[in-house]
Length: 258
Image (cartoon, rainbow, N blue to C red; front, side, top):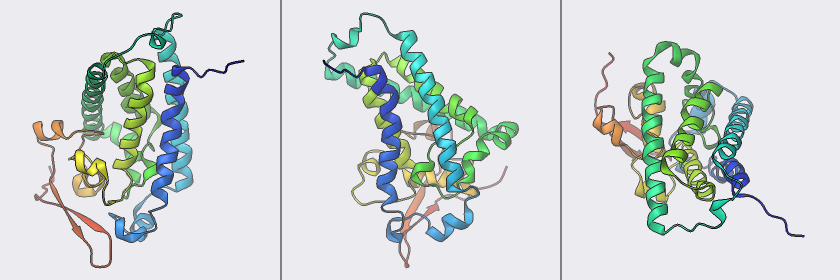
């Protein structure tokens, strides 16, 4: 008797599992001050929400995410299971991944920026995510359930549909996107991190946005910084080593309140 796991099931579950496994990897380093962008003391003092609440919030969002993924795969699937028979070239897969990255980035930039500019949405929805002034890995998806649905889940669905990728390809794309999102919120600067080498949008870049001086800048997530640069919301920074260990992210330009 052969037991098969469908691509749709893996496409739903894999990103959820990857989130906690990859976050767990960073937990191993969070007590080492020499890799941190903020000290452990700053994390404890500045963050406005308990880790227990963060975990519960993330699990709620992942539940909603899984339900939407199941619905999406059901609506777009067929009885013939074409993904089992069709083969795509590396060029096709690369094109689909790049298209999905652009779509996800575009959707998240404008939705994210609007949630900051609309005072009602920021106060009642997006401000929950900014209770983590000092981000950490498994807090990456901590936000209001409505924000999680609009920003992450709908953005992911659009990326899947507009790129034309198969459920099998989505397993790898959304697992990769999940790892990237966790990495951006990890609050660490580890040597040899490939994300820091290949992407300008990284943990230091996003840390700027979580600070009071940077809430009107660096909206881009999770891959590129193009929209920030085009629309004037890009804040450059320097990364300097602290004498007592760790790093400090410093904005390059002077910020003026509107």
